[in-house]
Length: 112
Length: 112
Image (cartoon, rainbow over all chains, first blue to last red; front, side, top):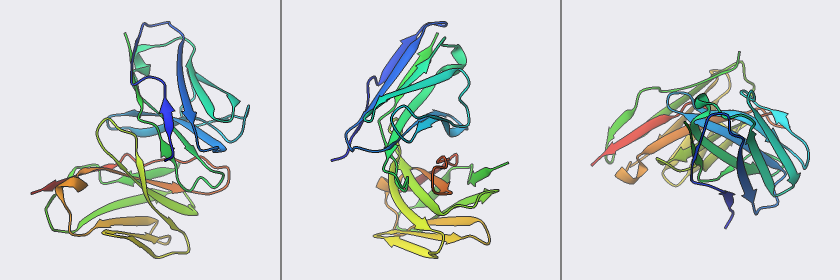
């Protein structure tokens, strides 16, 4: 069965820390996505990637960066975590057509 | 600017009835429209996709319609069951290398 794995289910960090969220997919998908989800705001796209070392900004990239060195792995980096980055972070992957996204279980990040 | 609107209020429905959820979009020209289900604390799960040249798509108790003139998709669950209680998300997708953007979702509660 297809699988998108996020490294942590819950994470607590301090303001100003550098935070890495890792996502691995086992479906040989070209596309990978990072979203954050907040009550009342829904899923918002942070960054996506359609190939190794390629990245595109989504709707809310400020304060975030990404890395895709290998096809199966897409990392989200918070350079200096802030309290307004407390959120549920969801990673997804899809084949070339993007007709169907497969999501991970999410990482609930709290920045104190 | 682009906008995706779903019923912002929760939808409560009696078991056995048909639930109808709405997805309206503006300033989009989607080639596809995707529907997902999300349970609390989990990532969204793909349910159905309908293409712009399709009026209707069915899968078991699920039916989706797509009206590109009205810029609207309707998602129906017939013979609803308490297990159908979840949040349902729509994602109009333009195709190609475009980003996949979601509506805020509609929370459905099926009452026994």
